[in-house]
Length: 397
Ligand SMILES: [Zn+2]
Image (cartoon, rainbow, N blue to C red; front, side, top):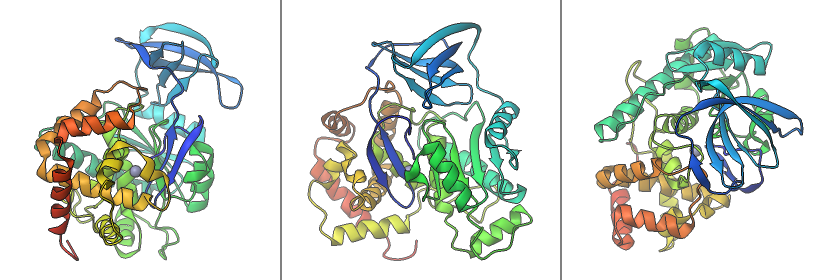
């Protein structure tokens, strides 16, 4: 997951599946939330130094006059008072672009050679060909439905996104690296995909290219290549889960979301169901890659304050040495809480989803809220976590 690239980057972290550039708080805490959502033309100085005007709604108006705005493509921008030029309210309500309009906007941005492929809930702009787009679209639709159903069964009502979700699929790693560098910064260029909190898009590339396969002719062809190659569907699923979680009411963009939780959620769904054409039976399966990494961490001498540090701050995710273990532990913790403390976990998710945007918590506050949700005795919780993991199979599922 990528936080906005267009402001000072304090923290950079990398892992095989995910990159995060964290947002420095550029606005003062909000003093007012906009109850209705009129459409406004907001003119501000863009990153390239020229003025730009976004038809947008104001999500947060900060005490210092800065704004957090969202445009009709779902892009969010923090506009500081120094960058803000003008606001003009239009005589209409804010709405997102419909699928055709969104497709056109993406095609205009990406240029010649890109086509748009629509599914009921996604608009995929791609130069990777129709077969790969169809395969991706089918996977995303299945994941979206499975995600909502999964949480409904667990007592958390989420909502089907009421606007199409944007997806960009580049044809190969080189195109991806070039686009990603421009779109989200050089840190993501070497990854296999990302979700951008700023643009609300997932950006992927055709991972079957270079996997020894010929150009696929149909979505079934892609499915066969995926099944027989080293293709990492987990990356696609991971980034797509971030996008779904931020567009279904589970998380709020630009609010304080503990990283162990957003990443844990994405990894909880990382186990893809490649067999079903309609369902998705693998959510919450033991994630063998993450489990293996967590066991390595245990063998290397996991410190007693590991859990406290994980839930308090993002510090462990920032260091490339410790990040893989922080991810693995986030997966284990999320899995444990969902399986063994489900009611409390759902209540915690609901509490986080209601948090105001641009209001960043201190490590102390994060820890206090975690204790409130799961009890004061974190040693007991930690023992429960280790027992939960110890009961997982040594190999296989
Ligand atoms: Zn992630």
